[in-house]
View 1 (cartoon, rainbow, N blue to C red):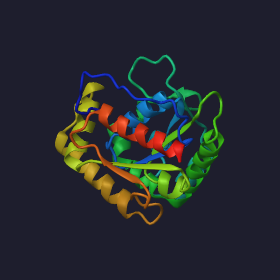
View 2 (view 1 turned 60 degrees about the horizontal axis):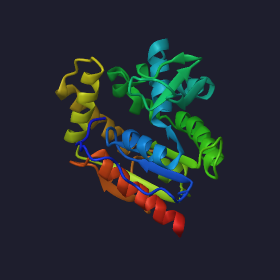
View 3 (view 1 turned 180 degrees about the vertical axis):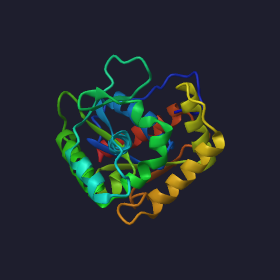
View 4 (view 1 turned 135 degrees about the horizontal axis):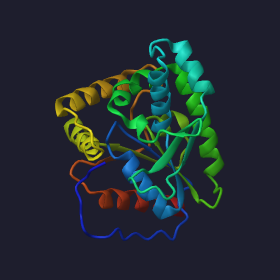
Length: 253
């Protein structure tokens, strides 16, 4: 994701262990993944992007010709598909994690424009949300007190602080105007060799915002106790500094 940039290095004291769980929510292209990935690295936390799971189910439906409006079929696929979300390892293509389906690397396939256009439809299906949320809670609980050499977990999505991990000690909600978020996604697609229409990217994002915020199950909204940060015009460094400062304060309480 492209933000305002700075040449200054990120200089943050991370002597504290942190709160164990940091939930980061927000709409599409608000910066959740970019910021969450950096925060996780600084605190030695696992970075877990729950949105990738919904993208996998959407991609699999499109790849297999499944009717996205058949809730039972899509729900069954979400319950049975073999998804692995792993650290990015030595990958040099800018990924923050590696996504596998049946051992096939679909990290970039699940970020295709056609998946962007349909993922909110899939994510609004209650059976899909129930299946994926259960797995996400298990991962969150596993890493909350430290696991596999990690001090905790940064989990990003749209309902982490409200539904998946409502007891998370630190909740962040990132936001930005839809035009700025669409511009970020437009530049991201161009960087990956795509030739998108900005008007279409903007329209898709507006529709996705509408579906995400109005769905009956787990609508997109800040948790009552979330720290709301507008990422408009900010660089990654400043946003990360704010979140890690909150993490350090939280760990001292």
